[in-house]
Image (cartoon, rainbow, N blue to C red; front, side, top):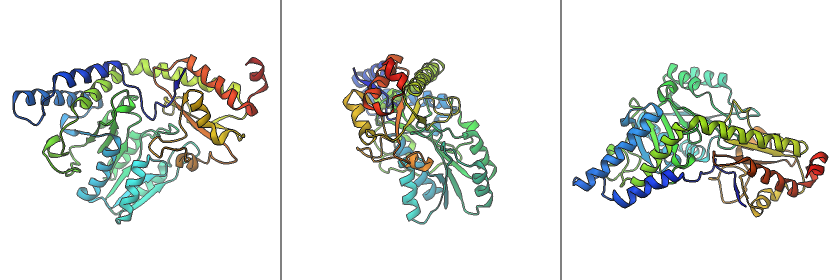
Length: 386
């Protein structure tokens, strides 16, 4: 048996998405930029996918631009806002995804002022601090804060931040890679200028995503060359990826309530089983109703197996994570866990993340394997029951 509890890193393709992509691969092979019938047919497929995605987030079709994924979308929003919209100051946080952190680091080296908000023990920013910064800034500013943290699941009050930015005439960008397809998204209510998405987080294909760009904050192309994406992104479109993304997002929206209920039940069950089984176990996540319901970041007390815990889990058939999948090929530690202070005294944090394909039987399997790996911290009652 092998259990996949790493859906925050990537999700398995839904069978319906595979079928939609396969149909396009077999039958819609024209270049969407070609003016002949085959090209026009594929162009209509791309534009229908664009309309589907726009409808899913309350945008207009002219505000959706297809990219290779969340990383490109985040880079495009940040770098082009500096280059084309006169941004001189970026306000972000200490727990953003690396593709935002490293992009901001580069912009800082090029002379952009960067303010990094600290977070509390659950990864939440201080909204009053943000308000003060917005009130006191004199330079053209962009706020870049992720909607849900990919490691611990902390949710940003995105509508509150959007309204604050609107009141102060500030650009607002959010990495919503973990929330598109998992929460209702309405770009108008968010008062947002740039929103980033990657399809593989909601059972779509890898290598495709989109950037929502508000019509009042249009930038110049990030990738130059051809006239694709209405002159915004050069390169022949990833047609079957775009179709798969639209299909996956539409399914996620249509099935959202059912999926949320299923995943929350799995997460709560695992949290309960871990609490009953192990001494001094903690969770780096906000409460069930205040965080990303797909993520359970579990903090184990010091013991002799912590250093190799992820490897032990992998050997026993369990895929989980110690942090962002994009940081490195090794378990190098997490800047998010460091920022919230959960890496002290030899403790170890593991991110278990779920999809609606997971089962309680898989939870039982994982908890039993953890008991075998970590006998030092198993509760006596749990030992007897086992």
